[in-house]
Image (cartoon, rainbow, N blue to C red):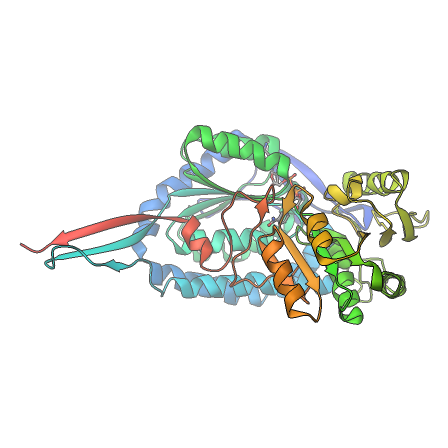
Length: 477
Ligand code: NAD
């Protein structure tokens, strides 16, 4: 049992109300309790972040980078604990949860290093006696709003670049992953000067809403659903502050007629079924050419049939539950709708009466038409839909025929097919003979169309978001 607290100005603080957190694999089991914070709690945290701004900025990027290195070391010693907590709180299988904790460590190291690298350019001036250069300045207090599906990595891939650039932050993680965020911050908070890294736990419509409207929040970085993202964009635009949105996906894999079928099956299974399909980059559609459709679908079904589902803390299990009762109901509703709209279930679909947790068996649909709801809407569950096509041009047309454009992959041995796909696909992250999920932390991450607000996270791209450019000209007299 963990009783989480807010972390404000370096101290653990309670809110007036608290809520229980349940284990999605055993919904009767309470894993911990969390504060349900109000606008007053947000106000305290933003105030603390504002007070800490100047000192943190003046510390210099190398000293800030060194603090991130220390934070990495502390978290690395707690990877197992954090992985177990994430598995119990939101149902991610333990192997993946450990990997995610390790990823948070790697992110801290990467951005710690950024504190030692160039943060501007020297630019020629028309007067040779003038030194002209740019510096990248922090934005001030940055509000970070994160989803539950990566409870460690996403908070850290926003916080680490924001902090090394000299911003102070207030993190409002998702309701369903607050215990994990709290434990991560509790481990490292004493490394930072008070007020630099604050955490407020609570509901999106209460604490989250207060944060996006707070006059002293200078920028917002959000990852979550498209609907909430659009709302945040409206508020941030009206307030004239910088914002960044990472939202949903409907990520396709194209299996060309010359694909390595075993490889395509391997990466389709891991892309669609790891984390029970609850990744923004999860493989959700398989656009498969007629010539290999029978061989591919047969091999896919046989592989998916072998996946074990059960308690995420048991390393034997490939899939855990989905995160909540609401998500369970939503995914099952979409499976029913998929059948009603003519899709044929090759495997899965039905929920076993024996399991009390929010489990959904891995489900494979065939003969799905591109206009079907399950071919258009993000499902966020262990469900994959096969859509037949006859050639690469049709495959690209179908792949692009959704509102999202996050990640996409093609399986082919032909360089020409690969290049045609890379050129034609509308996606922020394009992969050839690779999984749609699993983009590396040093590479830009983000989507086109409704998947993102056209900025990028991770890698050096994050530094651009968390800073603005100041152009300086110094004339010698
Ligand atoms: P969500 O939009 O419901 O919630 C995300 C966060 O926003 C939570 O912290 C929530 O409390 C907060 N929030 C909700 N309403 C708010 C409001 N009015 N004001 C301020 N904050 C508010 O999303 P979720 O269910 O937690 O996450 C799943 C979604 O996240 C999926 O759509 C998935 O595709 C997306 N996602 C995207 C990426 C990416 O990088 N593109 C990564 C992971 C998840």
